[in-house]
Length: 576
Image 1 (tube, rainbow, N blue to C red):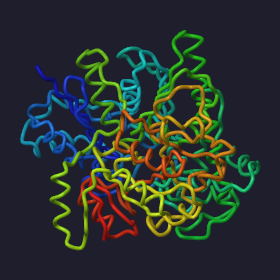
Image 2: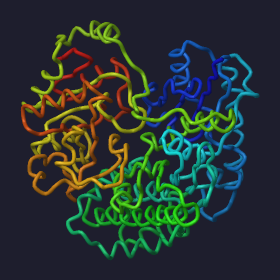
Image 3: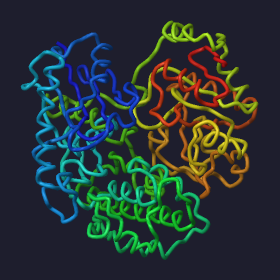
Image 4: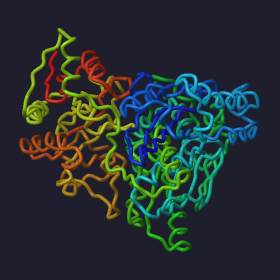
């Protein structure tokens, strides 16, 4: 007998779906990869019922089933608890988040999800759908696939229903809450608001992280003290002064007083003051993360006497700098960070929670790779290529060697292989690749190819056999360094050889590549290593101001409108 469980994330953003069959994963996908809208949709009080239908359709089609075959559906949000947000602070916009009218409208839109899905799939779903708390789904997405029998769990993002942070313990199939933080005490919202203060959008935390790398000195004590007017950190706790930061408004007046500068306008000059604020935002975030994980560590060791494992999820868990701060303490035996730590990962968490808790099944699925999305055959790729008379393409049996030779000679190559990655990082299946040996490669890609800010850092994909010769990794074990989730120090004697991927602080956000997990990508890097003695290539996502490409058509469209030199799909080398 087959048991099918569907997990859905749709209430805010990063819309996604995941499908399990008898506890094994069939796939996990993000709606933005199909509809080509960043984050899948706009997150506002009107849009909870906008479901990831293309993602769900893909998964059902892949398994050759219909919605009627699904036994249970988990939605990663519990609508009723959201009503606790009504007028709990003094700073909100009329009829929007936080107001009575806005929150009740949002709640009513959440209740529409069940009938909307039922109408679309022409089947009754009232008895199949369960709404599961958001942070519980984050925690489940990290703990259940980790392979750890027992683990401490930290889930930290902007907000779920009213929780912003959850500290838990996982044991076998049970997740027990230890402690929660509620709005307005939110690290995720802190980054959103500060991103806007620094002239970016609320989705641009990665840009602010990159800006923070540009610091000209290691110590900006004045800005750090300024942050202490907003954020107070103590052991296992933090609070945020919402009278200053005013999350649910576009009011930046109090922030301007604290930092003694005006809000930067989009496209405006980036000054040293902006860089200092970004740098100290990272520092205060590190303090918060360490205060929470150290609290969990003491709780596990002193009161539970369990193995020292840690799981991380939530959008803040994508912060590779803070993650490394945890690692380098060498307190934990093992750390697992969900590669789709943002809200998309809660679809997987909802499905896994149902399998283990609702259906009372034992642990089964362990996440060894994030390649859980669409796969395209050589025939499908060839059929798409034949539609484009303005492209030339040739098939090579040794395509890895051909691509490595092009990269060695200074070309930027699009690399489209295998199944789509689940999560925000391109990990060698939908990537742009280049030579890390020349500093101007970074500027070339940021300015000429991706049309983005020049300060944005780029990352290396490194052969597992050579990684410890080039980077100082922690003694703590983690599979998650295979998913670009930690910024490791580059060994001093190696920095000169790979300037394009070394950040200003001497670190690099690495992806460790194993032969048994991605053999084609590993072979490409190995070929580059044979030519250059550099066991890595520069890797950034295959996209230009849009979601990462998913299909052959997406890849060709991006190739045509960008300054990419070549595109490789399967064994085909494609030229303009």
